[in-house]
Picture 1 (spheres, rainbow, N blue to C red):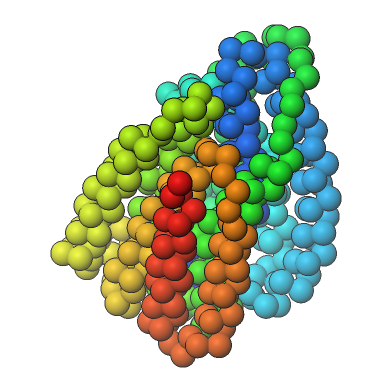
Picture 2: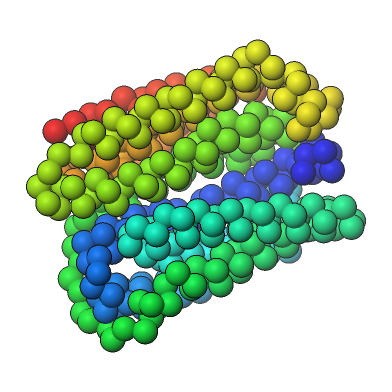
Length: 369
């Protein structure tokens, strides 16, 4: 996509995409909760059906209210970010995705239909990419990319219904949930979502669009590690949850997940270390060469965030009570330090790395017995 847009246009698109990550703050907590309960109620389809229906009802109510508030906030946000209001309004429709898609995918994940979940994720990404490119090439520019993203969301919802059709045929049975656990999940996953998305938005707010565009490329390459290892966490979480529900240790599952992430991180970081220029030239164009000084810093940050994600999910699969709210304080600390100490884009990337190191160390503390 970066080959089809200028650095300034790509900075706008990256900021919009980062906004979608923030919209997805409810997504990870919702999906994590659904996975936890579906793992608990596995083979009790009536309870799972009731769970899906209740959460979908709440999700539609909350997303409608939040979207209305977002449209008002966007009147002021367009001046801060320099983005057209209608672009902000269109991308805001993904607020509905944040509440609907994770509920359906969480149910698929919780009943351990990992193949179907993987197909759903691939289909959504493929539709977004293919339609986005077609619409951008047709002259719609950033609007084309946004429409591609929205159509991908619609496809994800429709395809999610197929593996759940057996559950929808069952009679609804009431289930019990734990509100305190839900709060723990919300706090922990919100911190991770914010840390994975705020960097591009802050870069656009603090630096010129051209510089922010260069950073966006480095951030996108770094996110390959983070999003590329998400499937490991999605497979590990229900398995470790079931083990802990049965009173068994899940450390073996955690160790395997960490080893997979370590191998992926080493391979990708090695690729960037030795072939960064070729990667930039192959994926983008020579206009993005200034991103070279940022790639390793930002990619290492997202590699650490991948480990933080796995350790946090492992902690959430247990029923321990620790001070997970400190993760939110670390995110707020990152925002504050980035605003007051980012004299240039390299220092900005160094601050991002520093706070990812702190979050990783705290995730180790959380995951310990």
